[in-house]
Image (cartoon, rainbow, N blue to C red; front, side):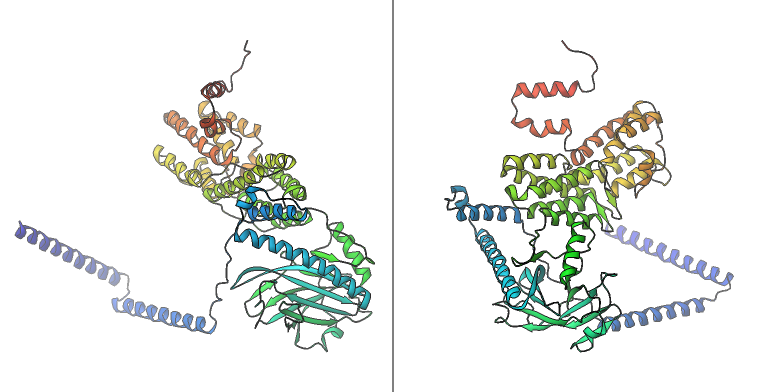
Length: 579
């Protein structure tokens, strides 16, 4: 047997060598017939290899001269909803002299204590800002403006303070201070103020030469100037480190305010105000004009907080204004999908205050999601979303809403219930991934073509890249098309009854232009498979589907109630009167 195997292997090797020789001879003959000598081809191959090697060496030299930027620190995601809820509850009871509940004592943790300490620090800072503003106005007739600045370093993510002091409409001092607990904030860093001036005609204009000529460490590039900021020691910053710079404002130059951003040359970070420029008025007239425009929704940017003395006008930002601004910025981005919208809602909801203080936020979020549910805002724009990613985002938001509902007050619970009705059900990812997998299985099982120019392939591409609740209606319409033996009128009737027109089908970024085709010999199999596929779509996209609600709640119902619900499911769509 061993000898036989050796002989077989030897013969096999001889056949392979013979086949290789024949291919080589045939290739040489073809080259000679085409008039291209074999040696020339080999020379061309060597030359191409030499060029490729030279390009690779040149690329490595360029990378050595300009190394790629180091990956910045990414702080871990923290669920602040539970922490801040407990902190608010405990602080509220501590302020009013009430005893803590047993559940609150059991929920104490280091993160809980840090949250309470952070709230106390913020309260102290607010009071200190008011005292500083009063002293500045009395002593120097100066206005104080304060804004929060988020930054991150090796110690994690922090919130610093930006203080802008305008003295007698002649001098502007811009100071960036690190967080109170971050003792090494901006140490050994090179911060630059990238600034322009706010005039009557332009939000950002080139600063006049009178402001930049005598200003040290300043470079002017077009409409912007860059000024190096000087370090602030802990004594000057009241225990906090940072950087500062002072600017002189010339008279009769038409300067109404200052627009700027901050750049950290050491880390490459840019510090902005909610993805926009910081804008602060310099003159009293400009301050009033700025407030009027901001109230009318015209101003591009408004400081987070405007601190004034009793001699000034104390105008507080309306409750929920920041939430509305975050929504407008999210909807104005180049890309937007349901996944992005749900993630943004989850962030805003997690950061909202519990109780009556956060009701305005809940109302705004409900209006936004209701607009989304009724298709008044886009479900997908310039972004491909995997169904499992959308499913996970919806599930995460639903869990957060449910937790807030469990711990909320009656009025808050009603708002959260309304919000929950506007969000798709979502899932852990299994059903979301099944949306992509099952449509391919159905097409392969029945031999449906995967070529361009047919309805099933166009729908398949939409499901893979941008699955939305519209797919439930499309699936129901296709089932009606199959049940009616290929009646396209039934297909479009179901679509239009549920708010989907031919124009909407064609407006998808993965558009559906073709009409469905009827395969009579596949009718029963397709009806069976797409009925099951409809259940998968509803599991992810339809949170109020009766069949799914009965399925997930069956385990807690008594047998009699289960039987009644089963009867309701069986009688759905029936016509007639019952005695």
